[in-house]
Amino acid sequence: DGDGDGDGDGDAVLGAILESSSSPVPGAARGIGEYWPGERTAKPAPPPAPGAMATALRSVPPILVLPGFGNDRTDYLENAVGAVPTLNRRGFNTTVLAVKQSMWLQVFAKGALDWSFLRGSATCESPSYSWYISMAIEEIERLSAEAGGERVLLVGHSAGGWLARAVVGLMGQERASELVRGVVSLGAPHQCPPEGVVDVTRGVVGDLETRFGASKMSRWGVPVITVAGDCLKGDPSSEFPWNRASASAYS
Image 1 (cartoon, helix red, strand yellow):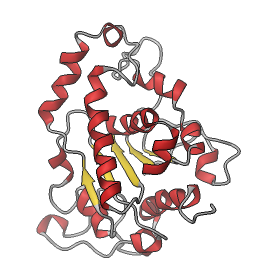
Image 2 (cartoon, one colour):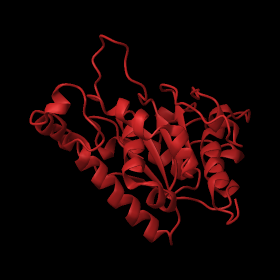
Image 3 (tube, helix red, strand yellow):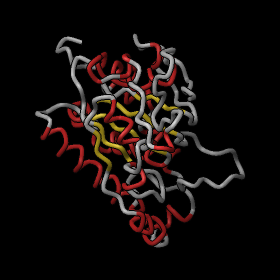
Image 4 (cartoon, one colour):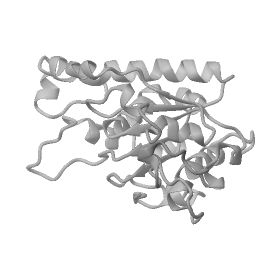
């Protein structure tokens, strides 16, 4: 890590965000989407665990939350326990991709005209999802520019998790390594379902694993951690433990 902001720091960012889920500090806020005694009666949140604070990092990346299927950006802003207030309490600058719930109708409208989508062999470039990916890339570029060239950390919820991988893959190695710090997926499917089970991604997850596996993205300098989702294939040669195993981190 010659420039002090390469792969190692990217992994440190992911580790710091996950630190809160296993913090032994009594009364510490735990995890992304947290609850505490008195939360429902507007009692303020207790201080986050020290290891989960942005100040523990050498540089603090802007965070872009990628909404899950059918979700609206406002779902991540509501009350004190949403993803955005939870991350902001830790000192991060968090933005949610400006997806409206009605936009998800494009998946079906455009998919109805796409033979590969209908037969379950769609790729990352499918028009059913290209609108989302284009929005995400534009927002990544904007956030990075506003942060003085700092790379953006993607936090993808549900479908936003595998769509984050599509975003990185379609950006390409050079562009992604310059603009994306890493990917954290929350409750996202990353593997094809068993035979006989409908693939709700209509083939995109299989395309991702073939073309843009997590180990490849890590070699690009974009580490990936999946939380409470299907495991991603690791890279045994990585110097960072969480890149080696084909495993998930469960909250």
